[in-house]
Every structure is written in C-alpha cells, then in structure tokens.
Image (cartoon, rainbow over the protein chains, first blue to last red):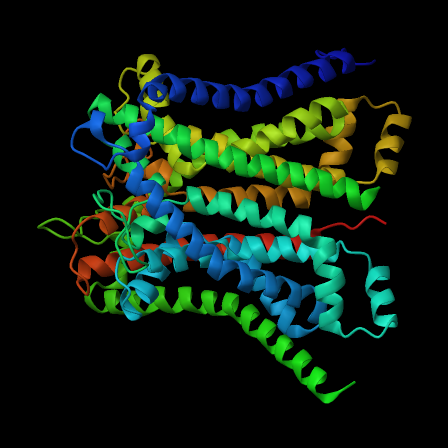
Length: 287
Length: 295
C-alpha cells in the first residue's frame, strides 16, 4: 500500500519556492534597512563643510577632508604599484607560462593568497614596510600593504580576460611575423582591455573599503592635517568611520553614518561601472 | 629575427617573471614574518601554556597567554555566521539555478554582488548600531557587545560568496541529468535535491569551506560589534573577542615594539593563518580530486 505523503510533490515545490524567496528577501531586506537607516541617520550631516572640515572634538564641526585626502593619496600609490605588477604577472601566467611548473606553483600560490585574511596582510606590512624598510606609519607603508592585498584580484582577472581572447587572433598576428610581445601589446591587450579594466575597478573598490590592514600598519584615527608627501601620517575614510562608530555620542554616530553614505557611493559607483563594463564586454565577445 | 628585437623580447619576459615572483615573495614574506616573531614568543611562553591556559590577558598586570578564549570567540562568531549563510546561500543558489526565471536572476544576481561589495566596516556599524538594539528588545539579557549580532551580519555578508560559488557548481551539471530526472516523473524539488545538488556536491562543499575561511578572518564586523573581552564561552549573548579583533586592538594601543605583548599579535596571527591556510588547501584538494567533469 502506498504511504500517503504529508507533502505532495506539488506543494513540495511551492514550499521550497516560498522558502527560497524568503531567503533572498532577507538579504535584500538587510540591504534596504541598512540603506534606509544610514540615510536617516547621516543624511542631515552631509553638507559642503562635512567634506571640507578637519576632524574635531565636536561632532558638528568634524569633517572628512583629511580622510578623503588620505584615501586619495593611498589609492594613487596603491594602484601605481599593484597595476603594472598585477597585469604583467597575469599576462605572463596565461601567455608565457601556461604549461610550465613555475606558472603552476604561482597559480596555487595566488589562490592561497586570495584566501589569506586581510588583517594578516596588515601584520606583513607592519613588519616589512613599517619596521624593516623603516617607512613608519606612512602612506607609503599603507599603500604597499594594500597593493599586495589587491594584487591577486588583478592577476586573476587579467588572466581570465587574456584567456578569453580567441587564439585565431593570436595566430593571425604570428602568421604576419609578429613577435610574442608584439602580439600581446597590439592584439591581446586591446582585445581584453575592457575585461582587465573591470577587474581593476573591482580591485579599487576593494582597496577603498579595506580597514583592518590599515589599522595594523598604523593609519591614525585623528589626523588634523593634509598629508603632503608619501612619508606623512594619514587617515582614511573607513578608518574615520570605524573611529566614529565606536564613540558613545550620538553626534559622532551621525558622522559615521554620513561617512558611510560617502563610502557607499564610491563603492556602488565603482561596482556599477564594473558590472556595466563586464556586461557590455561579454556582449561584444559573444556577439 | 634581428638580434636587438630578440633581446628586447627576452628582457620583457624576464620583467614579467620578476612581477610574477612578487606573489611568491608575498607568501614567503607572510610565513617568515609570522613565524620569526612567533618563535621569539614561544621562547618566553611555553607552547603548552599557549594552548591549554584558559585565559588571555597579555595586556594586564597578571599575564596569561592562553589562545583558547580568542579561538573560542572566533569559532563562535564563525559558527553563527555559517549556520545562517550556508542554508540560505545554497537555497538561493538552487532557486536561481533551477527555479527562477531569467528576469528574476538578472535582478537578484547584481543585488547579491552589491551586498558582497559593501565594505565590512559598514556591516560592523550596522551590527552595532541597528541589529544589536533590535535584538536587545527581543532578547532582554543581550549585552551591548555580543557574538550574536556580528555573527548574524557576517552570515549575511558571506551569503553572496556561497551563492555564487554553489551556483557555478550547479550550472556545471549537464542538462541531460536534469532531463533524465524530469523524464522519470520527478518534480523540480526532487530533481534539484536528489539529482542536481548531489551531482554538484563537491563544488558546494568547496563554497562552504571558503565561506568558513572568510568568516574566520573577518575583522571589522567583530572588532566593532563583538567587544574586546576574551572569554571562554559559547554563549552568543555575551561579549567575546576574536583573534582578528585582538590584532586590531593591539595595533591601536601603544604597545612597545619588541616586547612580549607586541609578539602576541604574531602568535595570534599565525594561529589564524594556519586555520585559513588549511581550509583553503582542503578546498583545493577537494576541487582537484572530487570535482566531477561532465563532458
């Protein structure tokens, strides 16, 4: 005799579907509540002076001027270091060392690096750049630490981008007598430019949000001046937000929320551009 | 080929090899930096005390160097996060891959990417300022800093990782299996959970392992919302301290360099590194040995 099922196949499907929609909505609800809450808390604080004021004891007078300046110099140096090295190793792994042992070791190594917690990179930077190199708690130390942190992202995305360039293009160029580097520079790089750019933008978005490694290499919470050179001390927007969030006064909480609005805008714009570029590029290579 | 051009080609190749060496040097650097100071640390603190002492108070007058409370805090927040993220992440992956229409997928996937792109310091603010007060109205005994709220938010944070990796695994299962299952009269649910998910299980396990590894190393959410009290407890309502929080706490204080207190962050760091390193390599191993390739 057939056992009567408590839940029939039809309702099984429906129940799972409801459950899944519930799960998806929780993620989206969190996002919405987060945005709504931060906007109500922080929007009132956003004004021109919030962008141009130095940090202060009084929440109403504090601004993110030094944090933005620090973040900008940090990013410029980080990208100047990470971009060439990351892109060149990505190209090397795919175009030159695709089959050899060295490339395989590097590949395993990069996947391992991508899994190392960011705070560990902070410890590496603390010992190597802050102490052994003697750069102290400077922008340079912070930028080099961030560069090492985002390098795996740039390498992997460059590699994927280069891999997607069809071999027929390479063979045609080789057939015309081009050397390997000429093929890469004139054919492979232009063809994969969009995808490499996508990866680079995502890595920038990762770098601007990183907080923990910068705290470990000595970014300060209170910097009442604009850094003038790479050896100066600095603060960055996420550090400033961290500092304000852990204060008891409501005024600083509002400042933290306002800082978050600015930081989120940066991340959303960067991610949005990256997603747009990626979709456009996919359409280009598949159509 | 002219000689100068040949030389140029060689130089470029060597520049590229040097660039690729940077990533190897980074790994060597991490291992060296962590182990050199850890060796120094263990000259002063016996290893047995490090793993058996149940107090961690290097910054106090009466010093104890037992890693267990920090490890316990780390495992507690990770467990909470993973028990939220794994069922939800896999459910969403199955839903997107087996149920949802193309339009729904096209909306949900970018939104998940947005969730994954939010800097963790923002999640930390959210946990401390919004989730904890809400939870306190439901659970009266909840401390202002606790493991529960950052754990839950960390769970939301890692959902996108699990979903995207699991979805890749589910998508790799060939349609023939799906069609065979439908042909035998199975419904979507049966097809999904008795055919597709088992066929993709190694990929799903990998996604779970990587998510655990991420949760172990997550810093800002717990540093902001879980507190700084190393406690040997599995009570999610209390304040705990994770390994990552401790590293941040010491970095922000004025601990003199080359002191024993300073070296504790290397000992704590290497403990964290060993865990994440093992998890990552287990996931590579699974991917290499168990990943089914369908032709």
